[in-house]
Amino acid sequence: MAELNNFSRIKAGIKRLFPAPLVWPVWTTLKPSPGTIVLMYHRVGPSPAPFDTLDVEIFRAQMQWLSRHCRLLHPDELQAGAARSSRGKPKVLVTFDDGYRNTAEYAYPILDELKIPAVVFLATEAMDNGALIWTEWLEWVFHKTELMSAKLPYGGSHDLTSADDKKIVARSWKKYLKGVTNGERLAVLDRLVRDYGVPRQDERLPRQMLTWDEVRASPACVIYGGHTHSHPIMSQLDTRELDAEVALCSRRIEDETAVKPRHFAYPNGRREDFNASSKTVLRRHGFDLIYSTIEGLHLPGADMTEIRRLPTTVGHPSDFPWFLLRYMAG
Image (cartoon, rainbow, N blue to C red; front, top):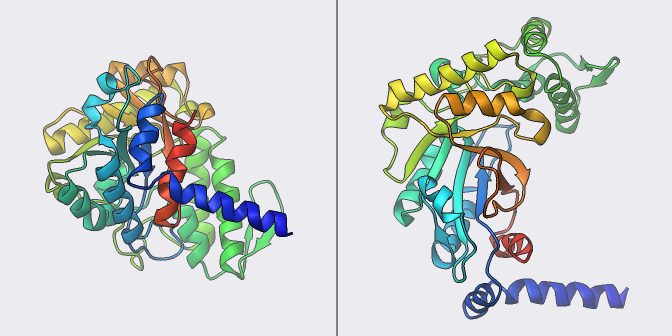
């Protein structure tokens, strides 16, 4: 036990040492990052239960650290900036998925103050109608239903007596619906509305997604990319559905912002969530920087249609540099 405690203290000391003002520049000069760090955020700031969110002060501390110790890329610089490894400050790009309203209220002022560029990927149906994207609606429906148990997609049922129970049921339905055809997904979502009595636009929940007016009022450091129209799993779409989702998403962003988007993030973004057809359709509609959720650095020469990202699930701000270092060390 004493040896484990000593090891923990040594590890904690190392974690504090590397991000130190005098050590970090030396380390990044001696061992440059082999690629670009693309960070992925979702919600920032207070959110109603049951939605996960990153505390705004943690986000602020992370951005302040990045602004001091890293080279922050504009999204349009990624293709050239990631072309080669270089010594000195690591290259970092900040991204946000889905287009949450609290991002504009809490994250944008910090980005603007620190002059940190970012790209936000919009699921445009949620922008148009104000409803939750379907993955978050599943969390909301099981959180708010008055029923005490819920059916599970693979059979059986599960209690809804605790917050953990509700999350288990929501995760089960999300996993199931990410693996079925788009038509079946839509039919099941309609059935769940009827079964649990929680509409997709629930008046008990203030609007969670950005409005187009808020998009147009964004600071100059923020640009927008696509995330499909209705947030389906792209590998589950047929060719007609795929083209319609991408075309409508691109057109809505261009109509509302007067800028044709070239950045895109796959919904869910795992390797099984997109395919060659997805890439072909996206390129045809002008998207040439396309982001996955496959974890890792974006390396020189890597496929620009499946850009790797790092999920920012770090808790305490002091752990953030160590989190990045694990990937930069190679």
